[in-house]
Length: 192
Image (cartoon, rainbow, N blue to C red):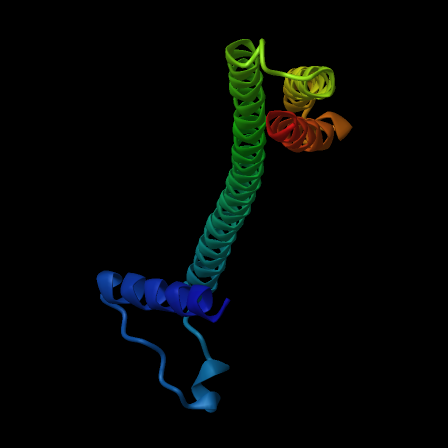
């Protein structure tokens, strides 16, 4: 506000110098006796000052509105970046869980195939208890494979729904325990 007033006063002094008038003396006694044309000059100066002040106010209002718009845009960009980061972290967590389930499924499949190959190789020498234990191990390994596939499907549907939590459900945990149990039972069958 003081800058606007100073600018207006400087503009008034420049106008006086341009017309060839000298600035009024600072003596208070001389201010009472003004020349006859100074009232018109005073009105012009007042109007000019008002115009300058209005222009400066308008410029300040424009700058304020521009700054508010920029602030809102920065806030929106920050919000978008946070949302993108949250989605990226969700995607990475889903990929890690999916890789874990694929590993469990692959291990169950390889364990099942290896158990069948070993059973076929020892078919004539296996006792009835070993065959039954081996069959139970196969079933556990096939259960682990099925649970891993089921958990992958559940995880895929939870990735699509962004409001749902990333959880493979109990299938992921069951697949791991069925794999461990199946491998343990097949190992016991080989020892019988």
